[in-house]
Length: 459
Image 1 (cartoon, rainbow, N blue to C red):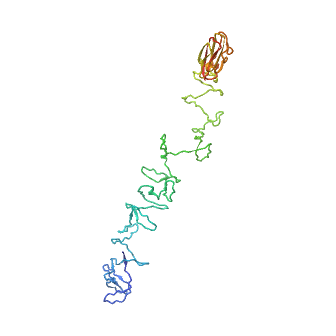
Image 2 (image 1 turned 45 degrees about the horizontal axis):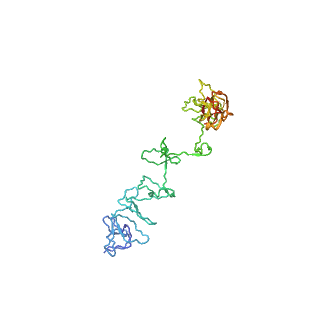
Image 3 (image 1 turned 90 degrees about the vertical axis):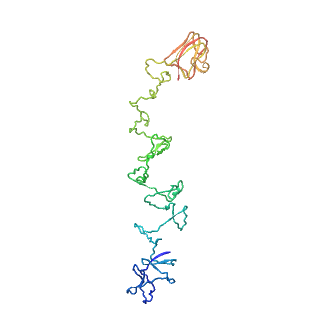
């Protein structure tokens, strides 16, 4: 039932009110209400003359006990129990009262709250209903009474103040504000993450936060602290920037004031140009060498080397050869003219004695046999030869050093009775031709041959 308060201070009635037993002329003046606070009577004023008052009541024609009531504000109280007639209905002022009868008018902005106001509630559903087009539903709450809000906007959403996010941070709870993870199609709307440019960047302390820091061009500033690799640190788990170079078959051509990759050969070597060393241009093109040859100079204050350099004296064509003190010079070595002091060391430091009545293998070598001295004397007349080779008495690969290659009366050096020969020099004067060959003595008879040979087994 709707309770309506209608102002009746000036309500025109289309009938005449007559008091019983008193004759009055019909009066078209409006019906008025006595303004006295203690009286709630109807009065009739006619023709602007003195007021004439009488008590009248508006009653139900069928039941005189049903009388109209007037409240303390001199308003006629009426009740609308049925539906209003169709069409435009002018009701007048309509007051909405609460259960206690108090007015629930809003007080406006920035004023004290009224004693009574309308409350808007919501509803908690474990499984919220699905609303179809054109239908309505209560506001949805969670089980703690918090209003559920789903923010959907295709434009810019401005949020001020502190925003606190609760609940589990999962993709399912953020389907409207995050991009698709992986290779899916990006959503039409996404949250935009911005940053802040500051001439002097902030310095934060522990547990503080701030906006992302941008450069003057809008690029994100990244702190390289976590990208720095400590010297001699463990390779596993390191993070750092990778410097890349371009691999080309030839030298690239660069333009001044431009940034380019460093250059690698196809073998992975880094190309470099030694245009200066410690700020000084190095000397090149020494002697007859090409223009790209660096000139190497040994300083006068160069410290002694712990390992000797391999240096060979040469006249420009023939390099000299150095051997150990126990070694012997070879005839193939280039000559180095020196003054020997105090005494030269013997070149041929090995000797073999000869005392044979028949042909024999007298010496086996590892390298080649170099002979510095030979002395032979025989007791009877025979032919004698000295040969090299392998096998029994040098029968394989035979080559003659003196005489022939067979032991008979027609080959070899003819020695008379108690005859022979002797030859001695300060350096080798004869040698075997093949490394590893043996030295053999051939005789045509059976008389005694004696003597000695000085030699060296050398490469």
